[in-house]
Amino acid sequence: MAQKPPACTLQPECVQQLLVCSQEAKKSAYCPYSHFPVGAALLTQEGRIFKGKGRVSLCRPDWKCSGTSLAHCSLKPLSSSDPSVLASQVAGTTGCNIENACYPLGICAERTAIQKAVSEGYKDFKAIAIASDMQDDFISPCGACRQVMREFGTNWPVYMTKPDGTYVVMTVQELLPSSFGPEDLQKTQ
Image (cartoon, rainbow, N blue to C red; front, side, top):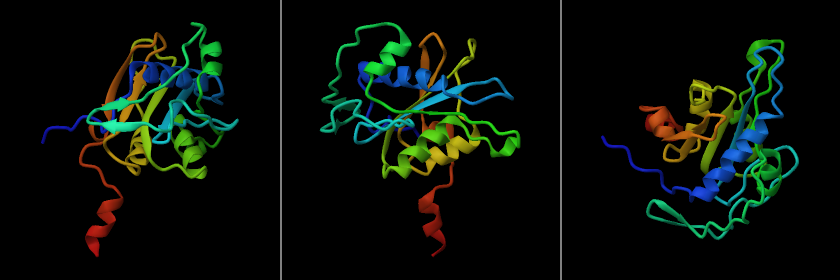
């Protein structure tokens, strides 16, 4: 079966700002054991992304999906190429990985961002961007993160980046084909 394109794709300016947010989130990573910082920026349907200091609009909340394009993406022009300055201009919030000496208790950046959003009442997601320091490969979410993303739908884009700003994008469905989700629990009744 052919994969459907994501329900809504982001305008290039929205993608750029989402990527900047994920790079900035990486700076907050607590990774004293692996020394492998990861950041994630999760965009909700309402135009919000999550980090510890609150949430603000990334794009206007009156977005309308039109086929495979996102209409009405309204952003302020970026006035700097410095990532830390860009992140302060970007309306957004993020998550980072948090390790623990008891290794299994650590949590990935993607799940941190999703859990922050859900704890604030957001459950409909438009996209997520993930950033790391890997130079030669695009950062890819682990299996646990893919399953958590899948809980909130299969047809939303995951932007996997490199530090130079390049990225590949796949849907959750492409990252976790033949997945198990909430609707499968209804099949036994």
